[in-house]
Length: 220
Image (cartoon, rainbow, N blue to C red; front, side, top):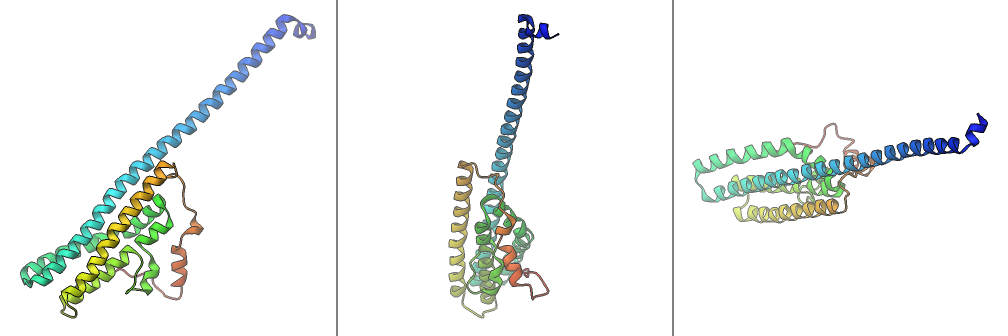
């Protein structure tokens, strides 16, 4: 047996076996690397498509809520009771839709572009600073309250319009900022990165409310 291994034929067979085995291992490694790369590409493409669809849906939601609020205020100025009741009823339907999705929207924004942008949309700490909110949702809350006060003749329509105009700028700025950051992350292939749980300021906001027996209120 030793003589066979030392022979030319034995050396050739051994080399052949080693080449075959190493080739099979190399092929398996290449296939595994290709599969992992292709899987990542597929996941990235899916995340990008989901993100693009979400941004479209989110933009429409923001636009629908703002336009319904503005129409409501215009109807208050017109002093046509029948038209006012009709537009008011439609506006409150948009409020219901908004309130039923803002948690989902915040989570998706956080996954897509990060915690800072999620807070720019909805920061529960604004519950303590209702007159000077920093997030879009609570800007809507503020404008909502001012329009209702104008509806009850507690303030002028012009006073409420100033707050609605400020809200318009906030809506435009946030949508542009989120879209820009989403495209930046897509270009730099960062869409598959998951933000760490300890980076969320939501937990900090909850801690600030820890003495209260209920979560942040729903606004109607």
